Structures are given as structure tokens and as C-alpha cells.
Amino acid sequence: MKLATYVFADGVRVGIVSEDRIIDSGFAEPLMELTDLAGLARLAVAAEHGRPQPLARERLLAPIPHSPLFLGVGLNYRDHAREVGRALGDSPAVFSKPVNSVAAPFADISSHFTSFDYEGELGVVIGRRCHRVAAAAALDYVAGYVVVNDLSVRELLRPDTLVLGKGGYGHAPFGPWLTTADEIGDPQSLAIRTSVSGELRQESTTAEMHRTVRELIAWLSQALVLEPGTIIATGSPAGSGAGFDPPRFLAAGDVVRVEIAGLGAIENRVVAP
Image 1 (cartoon, rainbow, N blue to C red):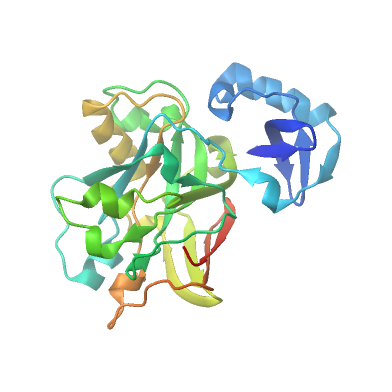
Image 2 (cartoon, rainbow, N blue to C red; image 1 turned 135 degrees about the vertical axis):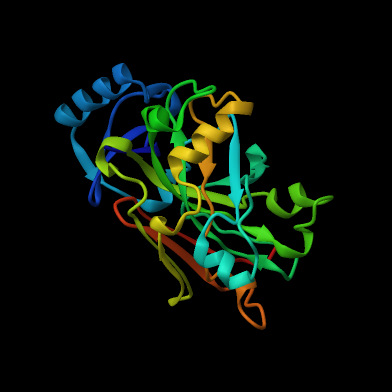
């Protein structure tokens, strides 16, 4: 299923998406509370009996508007490492984004810094409490997947200001909905593309990941308790603005589109701050 947090005419509820239509599930609970087996069963019944209506993308909110933890992984694609001339480390580079970085999948984005950059990424949504799990079992804890644009201010991506560079207001749009894990199967075979104002900038596949989704979940869960609704942005392939010579950062009027096979696309217009 494809599950959205949607602004219906009379309130925000979980919706079930089918192509360009959406069905009101009737459930106002946060989506993260409906990703266990019982919750998915209830949603399946709603999908079978509900009445579809046209899907308006401006009514889509971030699928998990209030994630308990939003983690990002840096330098996790081999093609990106080659692009920037850096070696892949023995352990993942990990950062977090604050709650107010989360934005709707088609929201406007902005920054007053000139080194505003995009990074298209596969996002993993944890579906049940996950702590000290083995890689072999890690995908059993995944509720589903989303498309993420991990926006950054490059000039602030230093150890002493990393949270400032990654944590800007609205600098983590994702969605457009949560695609449940059973629809995806292997998360290491998904095509990912990012364009800026129609120009293709990133074109790769999650097979280029240095550390797989399984490995990332297992590694993170050794130190952290990953609660339902936790989001893990799994790194970005070659082609971000910083990878060009000279860099090609975002400016007002640009439209950034990130698309992942099977998951859909998000699109965000850059506006003046």
C-alpha cells in the first residue's frame, strides 16, 4: 500500500493512494501508529471499502510529520565518493535533523545562504521498536520507504556547525507517501533520479550504496533505540550541486524533483527567504 498523511476537507487523516486517487481511511491516528500488522490490516479493509477521490498534491503532508528521530547518513554511495575523491570509511557518517526540518513533499523551500544544495535519497521508515538487531533481520523492522531531499547549506557542513548545515527549517521534505515494505522487496535495486528545473543532475541506483539498508539499520540500532516512525535517509549518489566544478547550488526559481522507482516523486520550488 501507499499511505499518505492528507488534508481532507474536514481534517487530517491517513489516506490510501492508488495512482491519482486517494481513499480516506477514516483514521486520524499518526501514520506511525498504524504501521504494525494490526494497523495495516485495518488500512487494507479501509482501502477495500472506501470511496476514492481525486488526489491533490498540495494536500499531502509529510507522511510522518513528527518523526521521533530523523537520521541521515553521509558519503554512502560509491559513485559519490569517487566524485568527491574521498575514501569510504569503516563506519557510517551519521547526523540528525531536527523535527522542524521536516516539510511536505511539494512544499516550497528556501535558504538565505548561497550554498544551498540538494541530495536525493532513499528514506527508510522504521515500523516497530528496533534495538541491537542483526543485519539479517533488519528489514523485518521496516514499515516502508519514502523519497527524501536532504537539503544542506554547504558552507556550514563543518564538525562544529554540522547541525546548522543540515538542520534548516523545512530542509527535509519527504514523501510523497509511505510505500509499504512488501511492495518494494529488495531496497538495493531502486533507480534514483534528481533534476533541477528539468535538468537531470543525479541518476543512479541504490545498488551503489556502500552500506546497505540492512547494514545501516543494524549498525545504528547498536547505539540507538529506533522507535516506530524513525526515518533514516540513506545517503545520496553523485551529482549534488557541490559535486560540480564550479558548484551549482540552488537559487530562487529552481524546482528540485527527486524520483525513486516504485516510490513516486517529490518536487520542491526554491523561493526567496
